[in-house]
Image (cartoon, rainbow, N blue to C red; front, side, top):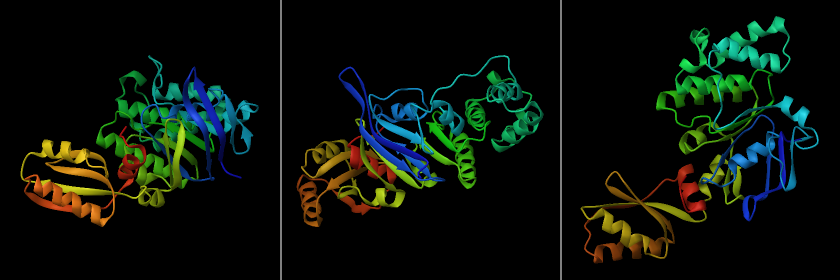
Amino acid sequence: MNAVEIKGLTKAYGNNYALRDFSLNIPRSQVCGLIGPNGAGKTTAMSILATLLAPDAGSAAVNGHDVMSEQAKVRRLIGYMPDFFGVYDNLKTTEYLEFYAAAYRIPVSERARLISDLLELVNLTEKSHSYVDSLSRGMKQRLALSRCLVHNPEVLILDEPASGLDPRARAEMKEIIRHLKRMNKTILISSHILPELAEMCDSIAILEQGKLVTYGPVEEVTAARQGAKILKVDVADRLNELLEFMISRPEVVSVDGEAGWARVTFQGNKAAQGQLLREIMEQGWHVYEYAEVKGNLEDAFMAMTGEGE
């Protein structure tokens, strides 16, 4: 049995579809990254799994329990961290976790040890007597994650847990998620930080306009870019003009200026690559470098969706 089983989920708001026949299976103890452009349906899918939203069609189950007909059981199995969460003013971190421990009916005799362990897990032991509203954003994110773990859930649903964090805070969050992975938690995580997501995940699912574009191991998704290649084109000058010129070529999917050179998502064979180089030189550009670069998860995302987050 898979930890998460989604079959044909559909959700519409009027004539606008957030999800269209979306299906996805996540094995136990796996970390799955869910990525897609803004509005692709990621948060909608997670909200349905968290029993907070009803689909118009299809079904979803967590460890075999239906998210609609067995909501109470599902809520005991999951830890849900939304992209935006509230904190309570005038509560210390220990009091904050005490409140949620009581909500999950954790025995009073177990709460002190549990809270201490959770704060240690998310590196907030030194802030155990600090007020929640005095914490930095990164600390609040880690506290919110610890809140999701109060009842020791088997499945974690994390919607943009590293959103808005500085590099150090993101690194801390990434290490915590790796630790949870070692604890055999099943984790569904969405993020805009694609390189870091690739490091944490076993598999990747790409959503666009509510539909599943691709799903599989990170290495396979990274390699399968619908035949697209990433070309680096370094020229002496007139970079902006070059970008405008290349985007008009039929095999070019997208272009971007990066550190003084052009990054080109290209769908064509070697002959087409050679033809593009000839056309660039015929237009008067002095080319310093023209080469294919190794792709990554961000390249796959760009090639498969045609846009960035």
